[in-house]
Image (cartoon, rainbow, N blue to C red; front, side):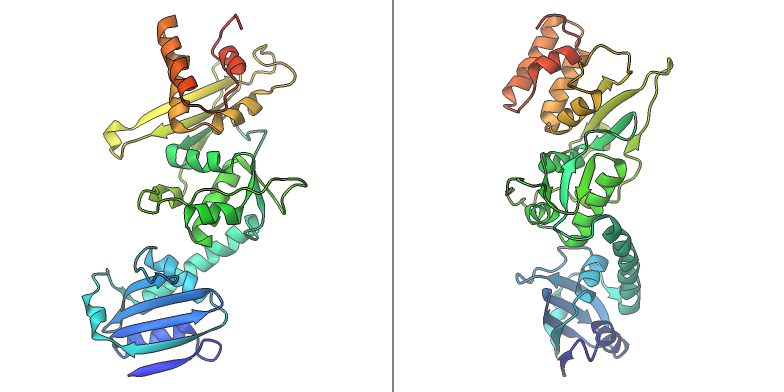
Length: 321
């Protein structure tokens, strides 16, 4: 059985409902304004979804892939009976259940668009943290470091090889926690930035997980406030997870920072470090002897990152420059 048409006359959701209700096995191929997509069905259940020209199945969660396919506004579809679809080892979704999940994402997407209206908006690190302490896990730390001095959402998306939805989620989360700012367009004179494309086999999936309780606001017993950045480094084992915290005194009475460098600015500087360099800074802060501190500072220097060493020494309590 072959079925074909255009989605402006026969919506993709209705095509899938028809195929699901009649228990068809085969593949739907959609080509249109958002590229190409494919849906495998086995006896009316969705067994796999693919986005893009490479035709790789199950790269994205099924509900997210379906959401992306439903965003096509123009295009042609064709369904062909294909028994080879049975060879796919996908989980299997009932059509109505999958469409309902995609509809829920549509609601979320409308909320994301309020924060990230297009992939042309400009992202940059904030100079003033919204709370006394901001906690960022190691994966999101890498995202903050990638944003660095500023870039458009489109560049970040290309580097991550991610869908608009997934990039929109992490940008929204970083914005809501208060570590980035979003502008309608690039500032005048902003240089073009190109990031290396991530290896999708090694890119941590937690970049795109829902953010949950990774920001906190802490005040000391004496009422003094502090600003900090925390990187959690893990090798994948919960038992092996360690927390690395770099905290900056933000009490207005402190003499740690001069008029030109605020605690928030220094926290922003720390946020641009890689987790490895941040761990070295934290180790220097925890050092119980000059020898331990020197070893940690040597690791910071070996990281070959752009670190203001004079400011770092002041932060660590050095009295000599």
